[in-house]
Amino acid sequence: MNDQSRLISTVSYITIVGWVIALILRQNENPKSELGLFHLRQSFGTLILFFIASLAKIMLATIGLSWLGNAVGLVVLVVWLIGLIGAIQGRFTKVPFIGDWFQENFRFIS
Image 1 (cartoon, rainbow, N blue to C red):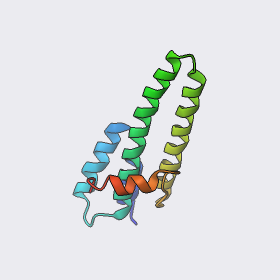
Image 2: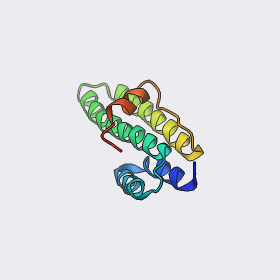
Image 3: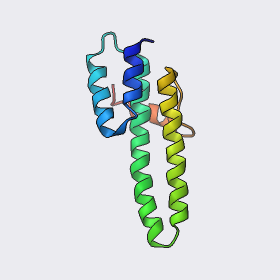
Image 4: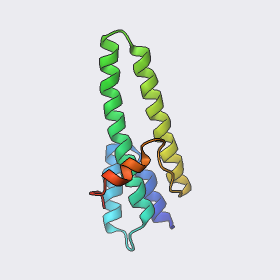
């Protein structure tokens, strides 16, 4: 593990723009690190979770369950923080519950 792979891992969690920047950095990395690839997949899944949670929050608010939407958003925030902290530490920390699924199903990210 080197500083470049930790940078790629960490930047991938900072919004969609950061994810794209991390992907470009990973493409230019030589040799390519597994840590960067791991966190690109985890953060991509987390971005999708944020999008789904945002839609769920809107739908729940329309039927008077905004508190439940807020709880869903808080769970996704915690998942994101777990991934970000793992990236900063240079560890292969999967997001809870669905990290394995992210690794298996986002193999198109390479």
